[in-house]
Amino acid sequence: MTRAEPVLHQVAGPASQLAVWEWAGAGPTLFFVHGNSFHARCWDATIALLPDYRCLALDLRGHGRSESVDPPASWRALAEDIVAVAQQLELQGAIGIGHSIGGHTLTIAAATVPKAFRRLLLIDPTILERERYVGARTEEHFSAKRRARWESPAAMIARFADREPYKRWHPRVLHDYCTYGLLPAPDGDGFVLACAPIFEATMYMVSVAEASNPYREVAQLPQPTLVVRTGAVERSPEAGFLASPTVPNLASLMPNAHDRVDQRYSHFLPMEGPAAVVQELDELLSLPETRDGQA
Image (cartoon, rainbow, N blue to C red):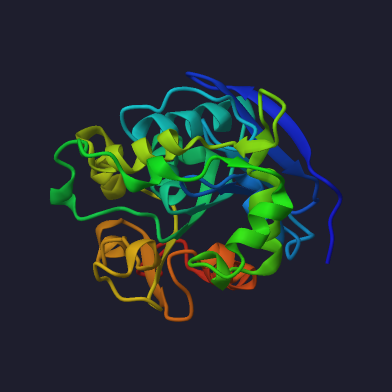
């Protein structure tokens, strides 16, 4: 299934220009936010399965085609970017879909501008236990040493195809991740990652900054929300990024949320199962307006 190529918009954020990709559609608006080190076009395989919807996908600051900037001191700054985009695009009643850091920051944004979003699908939104938000880590995250320069997207695909976690991914998602996750190198020699390794690493380091704590907004979130946690890989030191980082009782802490555990996929559910995102979206749309079913 194919859709017309999206239109790229540049929106002024609080600290940088932000890229928003738009796929035309007559149906309701879906607003997608990706995870750390990824980009908006990682949603292409999912969006291809949703031809009747208008779809918007944001490149978070420092990612994709958004402006390259210094990393912020907390995840809250990225939520402020989402708020700015929602306001400038005059979003009203969109359905928000966020994965990992995208789900975390979408939670904060949707509580801040509730009229912009009418329902939320949070896919492993990396909202940690409340007590972990005590201050940014000081040790450098290993992702700072990630390979940044590539000869071509094809070379990156070939390198990752048989490696974790990429070997679990839908082939189209791996293709899009590499194709749109690289930019021509400034010196003209090949390509470089659109999300610089130091930006990615810093985002992991500040994930537990005090300002990254979303629990004020978690308690205020009014929209019907589906929290999807992944269960194919159990938490362990060896599991790394594959295990779900989301606190197990998150949905119960939200005023109007439901919890689902998907045992088929790792934390990278949108990359492994685009069709599963569509299934979870259908589940979200079937939820009552309030958790107890009372209008």
